[in-house]
Image 1 (tube, rainbow, N blue to C red):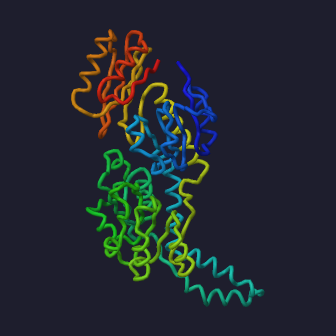
Image 2 (cartoon, rainbow, N blue to C red):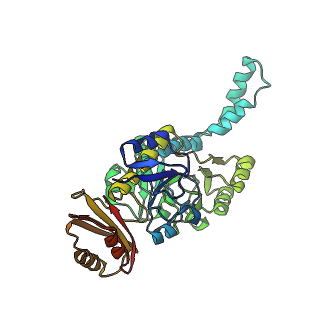
Length: 395
């Protein structure tokens, strides 16, 4: 099998890169025409999409740093790693719940300000007198509303159940697989408005796509009744002006997020009802290693065998190898393409041993195992079929 050049455009955990050692994929950081790219949060643009690029694998979930539409036009598969960092985010959400319910930060700041008290006989009564300022509320018995029940949201919902919270969840795109992961105690909500009207603590775990940008606005927040709101999804899903107004009017008790902005930082310094973290949801050794390994395995499986798992722009496709030669064809999802491809293969004298065709949106993807040899001229003829985007021989 021919070698496939891989280039990293972000720092990728060494454990993940080590997974390349048993593949035909080689790390080539100087390559100007890699077959595959590994990336984390680095912003990519047209200049990163070289002519030979076949796939981009994102070691993480969010792909708003990758020009997905342009990749789809070029037939470049974009992978992400859902679930690889889910536990890390879940644990940070647990910390945020504690911070929001028990006035931890303000309590620490208060104690650290008492440097002027040097005697225990003065300190103890002073603490006893002032600790009532920091009275909090327990998580047990309160209602946790979870918006988005994917890999992370389902773990957070399970955590809420383990904390003896009443958990309600909402996800209009809930998959059967995700539903099976949920504890039976999680109550489904009919709408996001219901989550905001019932939740004492509300946590967001939805992607930043066109339909979710600014979904948490003042109209939605008016359903809340003195709730704590946590955003460990993406900053685009909330409207900051609405958050600030909801805090000012008491619709929200506090706001905890992994996505600081200048206006939120100012509010945090002036009022203390905003807690900001520097986007550390996936910043654990384990999460970064999990994401890197998953990103590398998906990329190498695609380059070596044409299989696709966890793509954000292509359908999932898995076909066990039955012959030495395999052809991968990406085409626009228009009628009669399978017939044209099969006819062309027949005219070229190529015998099909096995074949799969799957579509997603405007794209379709074909894996075809061929019993006999495949010449370069045959690939050129297949590439010339109308609405074919790219053709690749995997041998």
